[in-house]
Image 1 (tube, rainbow over the protein chains, first blue to last red):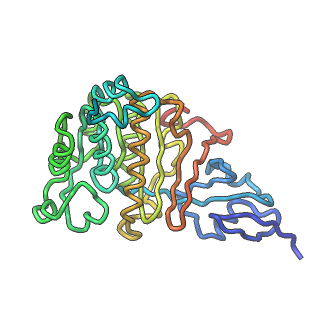
Image 2 (cartoon, rainbow over the protein chains, first blue to last red):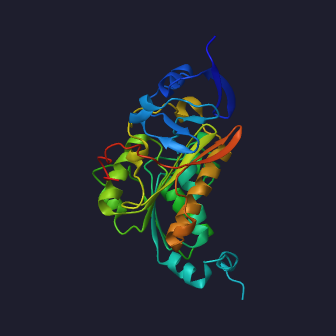
Length: 70
Length: 245
């Protein structure tokens, strides 16, 4: 059985497969809109680096769609 | 002697000198909806000497749940927001100068609307003109405070060309937003909270309180509540095509 890690996404704990990449997490959450902002452990993740990010146990991830209304 | 501004002049680092500085300042408020109306009201009450109020729209009944400056007579007359805002703000603080501009901020008139500004508040209601403003502010070296709100969430950024990332650094893929007020609505308290946070950063900028400024992006969610400040990282990528940061 594949090993899992526990991460927090938008404030909720979630078990995901070890080795899960950020692009896969975005797909799992159906958050793949082009204006998405990703924060991991308090730091902005540049969209061009999503492919390089592998999630680690304990990571706190926020998937944020900006609000452009006024 | 107690004056109009005594209670804020007592704040650390404010005083009569800070108040005089506010009185000599010009702030352009772009957009006079839920954000801009409330933010402009706070700056007027604080004694910012000149406010340029820019919005092409008219007040409608469906604005009133969140747009604190306006009332039913404004809505029934479909009053231009710029003029209605100036009239209400004049009733709040007649010592300041109010310029009502019922115009849409865009590339063609942006330079004119920003003329003489010390600071801009981005309270616009769509992404595209916000990125136009970004380019003007980078070119002019003009500091500004961005805020946005949809549903029960929003974000605030302090943008200082040459010192901070610009709007395009944070949002590298501008386009149609995932969240829209037309589909997702806007919570009245969310607009008021984001406007207050925006006005708060504006006052710090005007008072030279750089030490107290927001340094990242403040993302606020209210249902359930969370306030998160995100630190920027370029992640080793090329400098921004707009600001070079």
